[in-house]
Image (cartoon, rainbow, N blue to C red; front, side, top):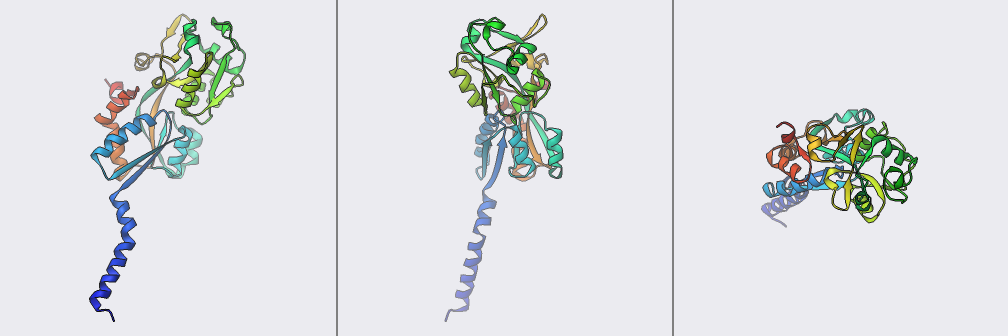
Length: 286
C-alpha cells in the first residue's frame, strides 16, 4: 500500500506532465508569417535579429504570394500575412469577420525587366502601350521595338501575386487582365528572375530589389519623358508602378506578434527594409 505522500507525488507528477505541452508553448512562442515573396526577405532578416533579442520566440516564414498572405491572415492560419499590394475589396468583404488591419512596412516599385542580352542590344526603354501590346501578343519580335530580330519570350506571373497585380493595373488598366502573349507563368520573384536570366530574349516584371546585371530594368517612356527604374524616381513619385509593402493581421496585434511588428516598424526594422533594397517609411517622411 502506498503512503499518502507517495500518492500525492504521483498525482502531482501526472498533473505536471499533462501541463508540459502548454508550459513549453508558453515558454517558446511561435509566430507564423506567410505571403508575398517581395516582403519575405525583409521579414526573414528581421526574424533573425529579433530572435537574438528574444530567444524564446520562433518566427517561421512561408512564401506563397500576396493573395496567400491575405488569405492566411483572414482565416487566421498565420499570425501575420505579407502583401505587396493593397487588399482588394473582395478580400476585405470575404474576411470581414477577421477585421483585417494593414501595417505599412515600406515602399517598393515594379519594373518591366528584360534579359541582359536584350538590354545590351539596345532595348533600354519602352512605352506603356508597347509593353501592353507585348503581353497581349500584338508585338512578338524584339525588332518591332528597336531590338534584335528575335522572338520575345513573354513571362507572366500567377494571378494572385502582388507584383502582377500592380504591374497589370498600370500596363493594361486591370489587375486581373489576361496576357495571351505570355509563353510562361512563374510564381515567386526568385523563380521569375532565374527564368529571365536563363533566357536571351525574355521580358517580365520584378520588384526593384530583384534586378541585377543579368536581369535589367527598363525605363518607361511617356512621350518625350523617360523615367528610369531606380529608387530615386520612386522617392520623388515619378515612377508610376509603385506600391506599399504590408503586414496584415486579423484585428490589432497582441503579445509577441505586436512586439515583432513594432520591431519591424521601428528604427532597426526600417534599417533592414533599406538593406533589403526597398524604401523605408523613415525615408518617405524625410
